[in-house]
Image 1 (cartoon, rainbow, N blue to C red):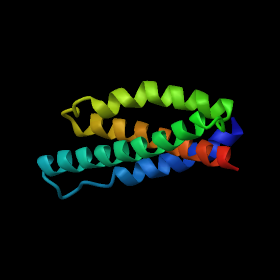
Image 2 (cartoon, rainbow, N blue to C red):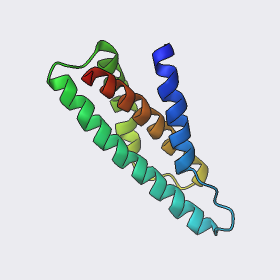
Image 3 (cartoon, rainbow, N blue to C red):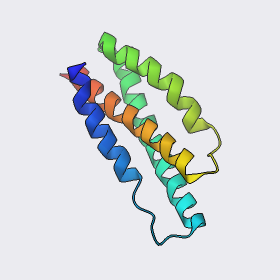
Image 4 (spheres, rainbow, N blue to C red):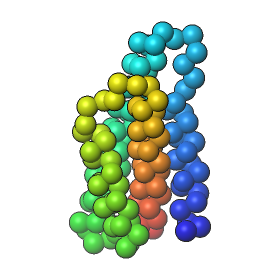
Length: 114
């Protein structure tokens, strides 16, 4: 569990970057900004997921990475393929969820390559 603590902290930081302050923006601009952040996070998810799956198919994935690939796929593929929510807070929650999993998968993928 200690090994997952660092990527969780890093992912929380990444999620925070995606949720930049929106003061001074109109509600429509805030919604658009949140949508763009979620779409960017889902793009990062697709890239990291593809890399992790390639490692798994090559037989180089640890049991922990395989477990995380399956968990993240079951949670994030529906998030990233569903229509966008209509509220900024719901979109931001999805963005944070996606970026957290991206951070964890990136960490485990790099650890599997060593």
